[in-house]
Length: 147
Ligand code: HEC
Image (cartoon, rainbow, N blue to C red):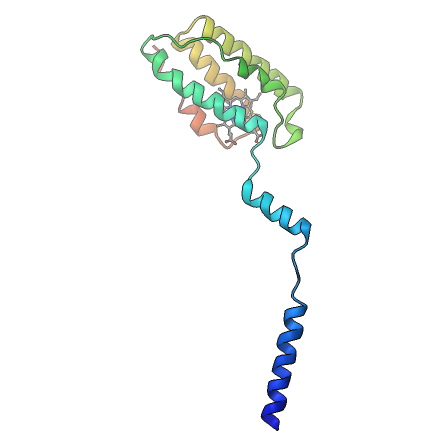
């Protein structure tokens, strides 16, 4: 009798436990899908920066051996408009540093040399010293020894 009671209770607990199990709502499903698809959202500006970094790293050995580097990548001009991770980045100093960077880059593509190349890397560093410290040492490593 005691055993029967225990079995009955166990069944009841099992059934109620099963019924009250929280079901994922539609929103949960959407959020989970989104989190899986893009765990860390990469901003437009971060993507552009990766491109700027890759392009600078690509031309570094070409400059060192006085080879042709091609023409100014138009994409760079969107440094002013690309959305940053933190909207507060878009302030007055950012605009000035972005202009310095674009001017230095235009000069580099017009007159490639170790000096004009290093001025571009310096313009990256100038902005990064106040706006985004993380990649500083990676950017410093882009510098060429003066020729
Ligand atoms: C006008 C300011 C400014 C200039 C100039 C600049 N950066 Fe950045 N950079 C930023 C900011 C702000 C971020 C953070 C972007 C974000 O998280 O949205 C960033 C992010 C980066 C990142 C990290 C991207 C990632 O994976 O999240 C790298 C690498 C980088 N910059 C390299 C460079 C290089 C190389 C140059 C020069 C060719 C350069 N930056 C010029 C402001 C600048």
